[in-house]
Length: 194
Image (cartoon, rainbow, N blue to C red):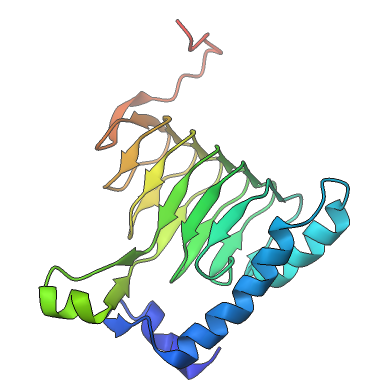
């Protein structure tokens, strides 16, 4: 990894407009462009591109294009059996760790980048980043937004349209804006539509 990328993972302010950072980012985005312009009958090509795009790619991962990431997944790790539906957006300016058997619904956003409240710093383009962790067996419903620094615990479900502003513990159903825990997971195969 280039030394110029160290500030992205430091949690401290840095200038995202640094020319060296922007050059490396542009190289990553070329792969994302290629991925998003593959044909439905090119699954092998998609897998080859994903292997180049992601920091770590587990087995049996599938992403529905289009897929939008600041770094095309360069700082993202995917476990095994990850499914990501249409229009996934990741502000992946630092690490996003996605575990095994994770399902991500359409139009989900995961953001790691933040900007300072200090106006002088903000208008100069400074930002800082916080890692996001999505543990094993998590299901993020359609339209979920996960903010920087969040961990979503193993086995949990985050309901559609939720804005996750705080960590979600393992084994719960959480929903809302802001997202709050509603109950533990059911183990009785109940019809959740009722």
